[in-house]
Image: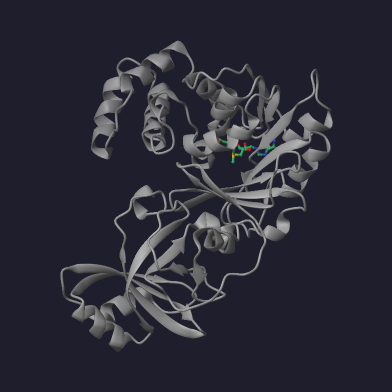
Length: 395
Ligand SMILES: C[S@@+](CC[C@H](N)C(=O)[O-])C[C@H]1O[C@@H](n2cnc3c(N)ncnc32)[C@H](O)[C@@H]1O
């Protein structure tokens, strides 16, 4: 309905608007004078989805969304990153394309793209959205089950690569790690037919579910962990990788001796969640010449300030075995009135601790609660004025 000329005219009229709840009813009444009620309802819903989608897409106001499709869509930034390895390949398939978050980027990178989904509305919108991004590729749309599409064997020219972002199982049902539709186990088998495969999975995916020879890449936007990309052996170049966007900085596995464990130095590094999920804290520490405070927690330390997209750097003002009273006293001496408490490897209610500290003062500090030499340990820190991708500013 929205793809008809009347639908396009109505959406054009609403373009760029963020309709507040108070405006919705009078606006709907006004529009019903010129358009059928069901079209008005669909266009107003679409306009609300477009407004929400501006968080993910710079061209959201020209795109079309279903609610579920928007929720599950990759953002423009992450989609552009995952499409990089498809650059220059011809005849690529996006087997669960949804409303086309990934498709828009694949169509810009690859030659011809075959986009499939079982949801016809989402598929139509994916075709529209790919056109909005003016990718160079020819995009063919097929409403089909990914499994049937592949079991029939590729019709015409063989596929050179497959991207698949299977649907996560509906919330509310008991979820097993890696549960998806089509199931992750089936997605891996695609590589038997088309060697170059990329599977997008939830970032909480257990490493045990990644077959030998596949690369697991954990991708964060700023410090927000977004997705795991599982690259088949023909695509992969390492076993584990952490990538931080928008910088595109990437860190790969390089097994070597473990880092030394020692007392905190002048700076504390809080690794990006992509680094911790990828299990690359050791690699990051080696690259920066840092050491660990404890073999089981991710914090790193060093004596000089570094700017890295892979970690947030904090200056250590004081470091002490954790004792609330002693910490409160020291914080007051330092003039700290506001604390951001971060807990790693220790139990305790952060809000209760903050209240019990009863602080007054103008200064702001970050209190890190962790373990050092098998003891609860507290570090009073302040943020380093560096706005590299590793800092909060990039969130
Ligand atoms: C996570 S969404 C894809 C999001 C998409 N990559 C994007 O960025 O917009 C998963 C999609 O898989 C589709 N799907 C689920 N099972 C499928 C199947 N067996 N074959 C094809 N598509 C399927 C759903 O309809 C849904 O649109």
